[in-house]
Amino acid sequence: MKALTKWLETAPRWRLIALGATLWGVCYFLANHWPFSQPRFLPYFLGEEKIPFVAWTLPIYWSVIPQILLGLGLIKRELLPRSYLAGAGLIIGHSLVFFFYPTTYPRPMVAINNHLIGWTYQLACWLETPGCCLPSLHVALSTLCGLVFYRQSKKSGLLWLLWTALIAISTLTTKQHYLLDIASGCATAAISYRLAFFSSHKT
Image (cartoon, rainbow, N blue to C red; front, side):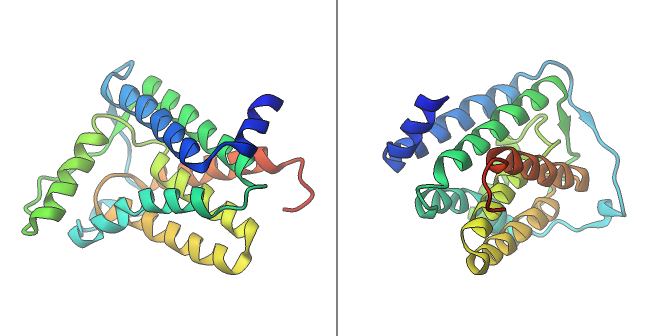
């Protein structure tokens, strides 16, 4: 572990980004397309089934990718090793849940006039089918990013957490996740964050 931490402290950021993207891609794709059992539907809560599909929120949904890339590029070097390990833990842990307990969302067939936005919706359905809903890795990684930046700077951290909140809402308006997925994704991010920084005196 010490050798890994040392490498994370000195490795070029582009290598960390490439390694993280590879880990996410392999774990998520395998769990998504070859789950252990048949994906199941989850119950709705608080009338969430009445939330409309809002096509223009798809760019917000996908903005989690630049959010994480910016996070890896802007985070202070001293926070990077623990944050990186926390993110890797989320990817691996969530993928195991997706593999052994796959869940899926009854996504609607919708007509989208904008070709680019329509294409991104089809891409989202393909990437997240058949069963990677609970807990939402999308929300978990975004929440972790927000928490780390709040640790780094409260002012900028609030903006990152606002971005995270918009991303979480967009998972509902694009019909990709349940409320339960969002809540559990936030919980796993908080746990991962606390485990990563529990020995640090700064909270």
